[in-house]
Image (cartoon, rainbow, N blue to C red; front, side):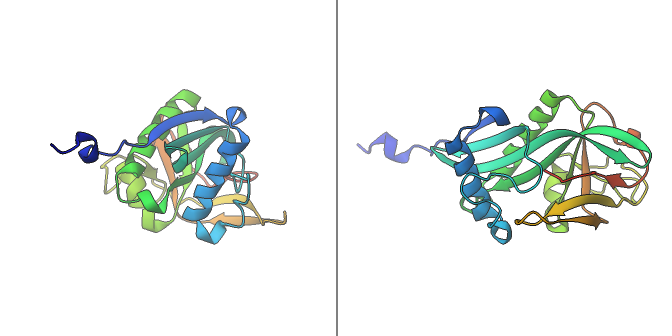
Length: 210
């Protein structure tokens, strides 16, 4: 009789949400190694135990397959200036699924855990910036683009009806900083407020993004 264990489905990666101060050196090294594999153009940032490229997160969502990190997102509450309004948001960044696990549905599971982390942190909005090629991934998970359209074509939800430019400080690996202005790719996640309550105006991070 065949061994049932040989035909068992592999265990799904295990998720955890961890405060930054609770991460060990081994945790940072494992996260950095996965981020370097996933973001090859930025692998010089994720060297050794340096598991961040911009602002260091306060909370991490991490999925592991055994001891190997296979998915990750970083979150940090911070104030940004939107138009004339200082607004507390939860910045989300370094959202990544290891190349070996892409196409398995792990990314969708990761964003569901990010949603739970956003609720835990308690700000009114999540905020992130991403490239056009992956915006559909976020929009299917409920993230809404800031831009000219009055209704999101994927979700049907109302979005802000004004063009948005985001301004933030980007640092090179050797520490030099430069102001960057980004005209597209800004998305918000409704947490304690609706998209209609998002203020009009450009976004000023007054520092780095996560």
